[in-house]
Image 1: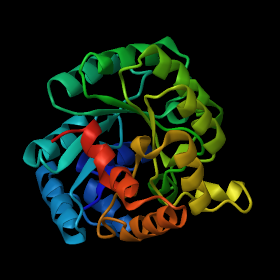
Image 2: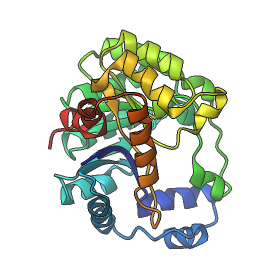
Image 3: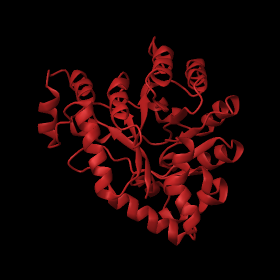
Length: 296
């Protein structure tokens, strides 16, 4: 059974944050109707729905990301309800005055396991001392990973709602992750989407730092920036540098009723097989590595 290292927890609080940014006073329910998505209801109800979805597709476990800063409690409630199936990640804005304290509370008191940084979104460079303090707080709680989004960043729901996305893509260079990974060698770092267009730089950083992992999530449409590149080739290149122990399968699933994106899983399994990856190594990529980083 696979485990999914990259799913988003689109809670009522998530939609509330989007509503405030749009400034129209829409309720979460109203936004969901506009998007033609299901209302998430309470965090506990959404957690139950995720577990039913995982069961329906034969998925063992999944990480759920609180996808706006300040929504740690929603995903903490979800994992408290299903601790054997769900692992909690959360987004933090390093520019916020309480960012370090929020990280400490989330990982030490609420049991969350992944701190998610989006340098391009929050306009905080990877070399900024504020990031070092956040990673230091994560490092104080063994078993906590630091997820760093690099490369191209596109948030589909923002586009659908007409919200601006003033992302500075210059700040999402995976080579900057290597500086943090070298400074905190016992902290696992995760770069999603194979670096989202910075495959070469991601592999360079991971080659230097044995604590950098790469997740395979999403449709990986960034491949169109390199003519002729295929997912099979991407898996082959990643395996040649990272080996089978530092690749983490993910889908980037998020909202309902679409639910878990089985098509992404099937295309990645096919690409891994075409790349000549053995069944044993695929077992590590599609579940074993996740269980090792985030034991039940």
